[in-house]
Length: 315
Image 1: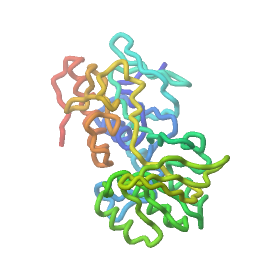
Image 2 (image 1 turned 90 degrees about the vertical axis):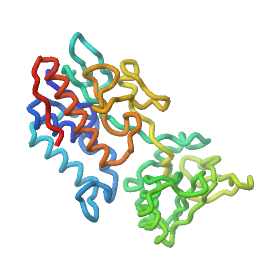
Image 3 (image 1 turned 180 degrees about the vertical axis):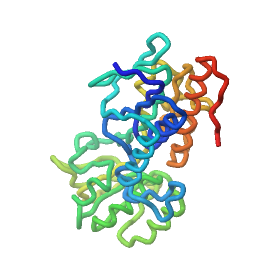
Image 4 (image 1 turned 135 degrees about the vertical axis):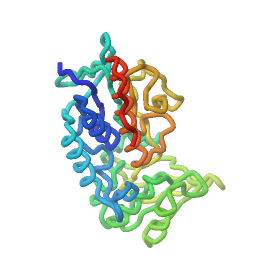
């Protein structure tokens, strides 16, 4: 078992910023993640909504930059899968597959996972044409037709990425209009090989061993159509990865961790940052703020425990 002042679970943007901020405040901090650093941004072709980046930066470049910044601030990193978080006396114990990590303050920043599509064929054909990553699997569908399910930022961004590989991309969503940011909608509209299917629900993903078609139902008139596609890329929301602490802290109706203004949960010393927490804006910029705030909150908590009066500066 390793001892630290702060354990950060998750090495996405929120976790990396939390590690860097805690390190800059002189805390012994470790960031633990099962897949390495960067989180979901590693699969984003161009990150354009990160402050100060300009025209954008590939996610696989931004992740290592944040990692290097955190390491320079003194944060340690461990590649491990945390399977449980337990309060032990006046500390928290994060149990990993290879080791355990103990600290009086812990920040949960393990983000969310893609929500699966609850229709016949969706689960059976994952990895066989059903995907949640256009940059990973888009090249496999070069010159063929694919479908994107969802109308938000992620769906539109991935449809644009797929348009560089696929012959044709159909975007299916249940609302009458897209909910994605206007800048993304403008880029989508400029692609001649992308079509929209609003007010449409997926009924089934068809295929024997691999995706061959998708069956759609029109919500306005009840009609059904079948599209021949080789891939279905699903972006219908995220499920917070809060099961690690679900029995320790308060959760909202969607499973997000309830926090106060300093990102502290209902259990003193336990903080949450990023889109795993309640009322998150689910933007990279807000993940940065969450990570920094949680680390400052942890610092203040530790100072109060030790009887010190010094507070961390917010600016």
